[in-house]
Image (cartoon, rainbow, N blue to C red; front, side):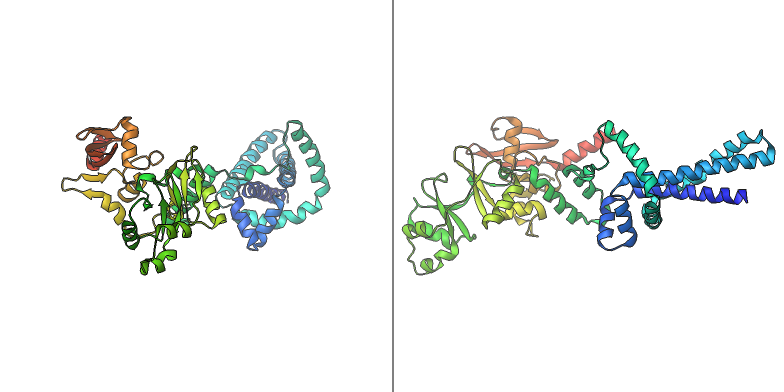
Length: 422
């Protein structure tokens, strides 16, 4: 009978040890999801974990009780079987049995399969906590008093919140549970906060618009051939913006040849300005709040730096909207020797996204900017350099900018492989 009771106590000890580990290692976010979905075990486990001090007090109360009682029974059995000399042997055997069968094994199982043990255990602990609440309360009062004396409060549960970088790690480590495309979108949303509008804007030298100083005939021809629904209107340079012209407003006058410069001025919408340094997440909210699709990025002196559109901003999250990467291909011409002719205005991010070149995307947005930032001067045609491991030759410069380069990514790969092999 004593051996039977001892075996039962060891089973209870294993239950308390395993369920403690299982409840404490539950994924809190998965637990909340299951509780909201109505899972009975998850609901009870979630309620118990709202006050982990009470739950731990209950578990340790039960675990210590059964372990001490098992030790007492083992002593009685040793005395009856072998006398006082067998007590030491019984203590050693009981320690080994508890360690293997009541501690290591159930806790390892609980760490690997926490929900399998935690949810059934929650059905036991919920009524047990009500039954033993006076004892648990007394234990918690003493323990919590000691914790508060060192500045720790059991009511403080803010440590469960995830930082942005921790959330990035969760998304990255999700594996097959989240498709790669969706992972990139989630990471793109998280990256909006650390990127600014000038990093993705269209630079001022690439912004197309209507110059009112031009003859009306050229303006009409530009409007007839424009692929855009909205065009900037400026006078005497892009720093003097008149407004934004919507093509829908000029179609009738354009068709009947009644469009004049004065009419263009009258039907233009007022421009929307974006201060440089604005984070992308804030600007996305501003576009939504103001119901706008584009804005002009300006510096502290009011000079225009470039144009930012809602499409450019959304592409930071979902990637390119067009499945045809022709825009990037037009700026990159592959050659027969494995090299590429690249326009200086080519976007570094587009090159990395399309050709998987190992170029930095947290600096200048164009190849021209990357080269000038690296050399700290405007290079002459024929200049060669090693740009982040890639052999680059400057072929053409114009208007204080690099217009065309030749880059040889295959040589970078072969030199990298040789270095790794050596």
